[in-house]
Image 1 (tube, rainbow, N blue to C red):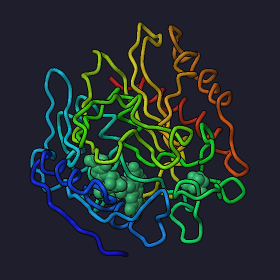
Image 2: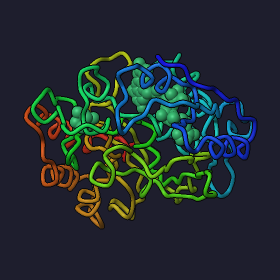
Image 3: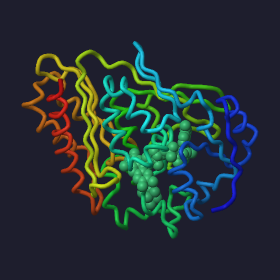
Image 4: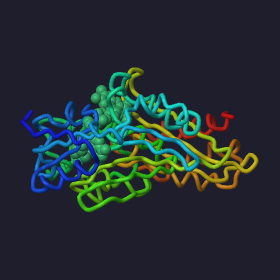
Length: 333
Ligand SMILES: Cc1cc2nc3c(=O)[nH]c(=O)nc-3n(C[C@H](O)[C@H](O)[C@H](O)COP(=O)(O)OP(=O)(O)OC[C@H]3O[C@@H](n4cnc5c(N)ncnc54)[C@H](O)[C@@H]3O)c2cc1C
Ligand code: SF4
């Protein structure tokens, strides 16, 4: 690992200043460091499009960024709140059990104790070529995607063009289903971006997975209060029953009119370069009796899936898991 300068910011303004002062150099912010320090700062996970950082700004030293509040308007979660902080927050658990359930399936208790929400949402992809020593792929600034001709069993079945990563973050999948937004600070000012628009695919920019530009970072996640009677559920399928990333995960949050689907979201993880909102299934359920239509609606995922040579199994997993998750949500009070 190469040397870098580390700065402990104590306020958001100071973090922005540090990023501004170092704008001609490669900069990064860090939360718990479980991905950035432990995973990405390997000598080989860099390239023309992914420079090794000269300067790292620690956000966990900013006190205000670790708080969680829930009130009449919804929830505001600081980007450096740890995943354990999120899981153990009673109001989050009672109002947004979907987020609690998703956060509980992230990694191991040890990683959840220091991994932050901001780090989880903004972590880099796990594609083994991207993280591998011998592969200068598109995402590092190279000129090839090794997953196309190589082992692509864990790669995208939807929306992969140029690069076929799957978005690795479990909390992002749940937060998109909850219609969350990201508050962003940066050298060009503050802005708020709905999660609907936060994640970007490889066609838009193969070097990034979200809209954050140079000198920008996430300060908070906000979640609006769900409508009364909203049903929620989370399921995640993994290869191993110890900690592992999702082969496929499903987050649902919806309201009902009698037994019928009124409004809501179905979001999939592990299948696309971004957390994938399955509007094709939401549309197939709209206004219909959920129990008698869910199997047929879930099968609609086959109409948008374009599996690679080794991952068609994920299409079956997704169809089954969508059905199971919607039925789990129906069974909640
Ligand atoms: C063994 C292992 C298993 C894992 N399993 C899972 C899993 O099952 N599901 C899952 O979702 N994740 C999983 N992860 C990923 C893990 O959840 C993340 O490493 C962790 O949540 C990231 O948090 P962090 O604070 O340590 O991130 P960091 O390493 O500090 O940061 C990660 C990235 O996000 C950027 N970043 C951090 N904070 C911000 C911010 N506020 N604004 C903008 N960018 C920011 C950093 O620059 C960096 O690029 C696993 C990781 C490991 C090591
Ligand atoms: S899927 Fe993306 S990250 Fe993986 S090898 Fe292809 S270009 Fe690189």
